[in-house]
Image (cartoon, rainbow, N blue to C red; front, side, top):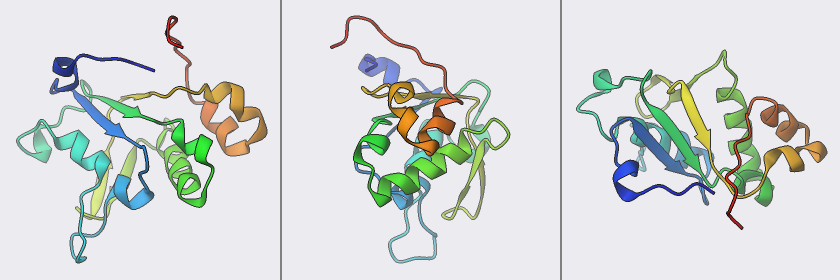
Length: 146
């Protein structure tokens, strides 16, 4: 668990996404042409503090994804789809995603922090997807949290 002050969460170089209950359409969005068009949590977070898409400075931006452990605790089809998506975008050679809302690839920030209460390294031994994901992550543990 990571705690931040409210002012820190509103910093222009910090994009935050909470995955609790989110499905793949919530995360990447849906087509602008559809009746229920939505840009998606990732795109909204990345452009939240910018005047336009051209203002984004990915080299200085940090993407914080909270409640990441929900994906491997729940284990349902929705979570598996989201987990597969994150497995793909956390590959260092593939740091972008396709936005159906904008109909283009969106580059992700260079620094992505996954926050949760469950250690993915300790639960990954029973799941190949989690094992592959854990191999792409460095564990940072904050002592003092129960």
